[in-house]
Amino acid sequence: MQTENSKPIDRSRWAVLLLAHGAPDRLGDIPQFLLNVRAGRGLPEKAVQEIIQRYARIGGSSPLLRITRQQAEELQRVLGLPVYVGMRNWKPYIEEAVRKLAEDGAGRVVAICLAPQNSRTSIQLYRDHLSKAVDKVAPGLAMEFVESWHDHADLIAAFREKVSAAVAEAEAETSQPVPVVFTAHSVPVRTITEGDPYEKQVRETARLLAQSMGLKEYSLAFQSQGMTPEPWVGPTVESLIDEFAEQGCRRIVLAPVGFVADHVEVLYDIDIAFREYGQKKGVHVVRPESLNASPLFIRCLASIISSRMSVAAGRSS
Image (cartoon, rainbow, N blue to C red; front, side):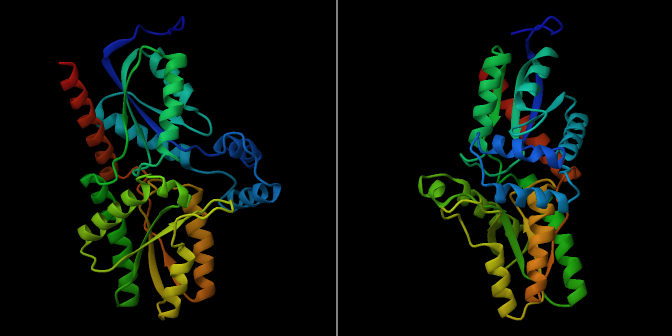
């Protein structure tokens, strides 16, 4: 499908599409944003108001789109290819990004979700949205979709740079070893029991990162459980803070390995909720800087995309 101003699709022309969750631009957008997240299923008004308050406490909006666009700009500079941004649950939507890259004449695209671990509750939804968008607005577009990259060496290196710096600073202040807790977004237990690889991949990311840092001991927790009555994967961050408090520990490093940019699950859940919970228990929670647009992280994305393009070129030769 081509518009009047679009260029002919050229299968030799590559583009890159970064996919992310999306975030509301202002507090008034949150009810519709939540409906998008939940595919039209509403939340109780009390839950909606709770989420509005969380965004209010981080300034009324999320920096996710700004950071994702910065990642795209840096990646475009490194790869020398056009890089587009599409969000699943808010503007610019995935369909808008697909339409734009097709109008610009791209015939092949590498799409990568900015979430390293694969789950049908997240990555599969991105793929479904992308496939529908391609069928609707760019049916001639050839798509390469990156399923997961949780164990990529450059990802581990990018995490190591940030987490090691936080650990070193914390240990310099305490003059003793500081426990490290890796975190990732929780998912419903039924998702894992049905064969989803997400939990296994999160544990592998944490194991590889701990190994690269030379950590003999570390913990893993799952955060941001949903507001539904069904069981979610744990242990929770709060339960581990309780354990460290009982052991007399006064400082921990809480390091996300499932998030690659600042957004509400980092800026509120960790920086506000977990820190406040820790203060009540006498435990100071330290968080490393997020990867955001760090050069090592951009190198990671560039490596993944370049490899995928090479594989695709080999198939077509």
